[in-house]
Image (cartoon, rainbow, N blue to C red; front, side, top):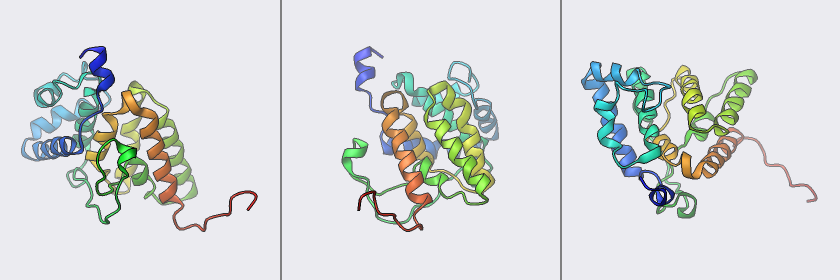
Length: 205
């Protein structure tokens, strides 16, 4: 991929991300050997994840530097217990403003920040989740590959699955639009985490 093409690349579409996630999820159910091959790619770069190429390469031919997102999400899905591989059903008709996503408005679906906000528990656990999220959004791709599995494991411990399609959609933009993706994760985390608390008046009001 040329520098000009890399600059113009805006990540996969929601439809492409959902199709990929559905295919990987079904593959893990149908073929235990494929699931094992995908799991062995956890925390590895595409160059290192040699057992994954047979299944993932066909989806990443034109993705350039963002192919890592497909490898990472496939490995994460394969590493989950079967019941945690499916993205949760999403209720509600809220829409994402087109200006915030680069695509037309569509029904709102939870990103990683919003999903992490659903982790309750003790104050220590809440502090741990918040620290993990802040650490995660500061990472480049190598750091994301190291730290994301631990965050997903926190969700799995509470029987919560992320929306894998949204996660792939966001990670496919990490090279080109990390600040915007990170901002959405943080804003949605705090919005949902403190939704039930009364709003305070801004200073000077």
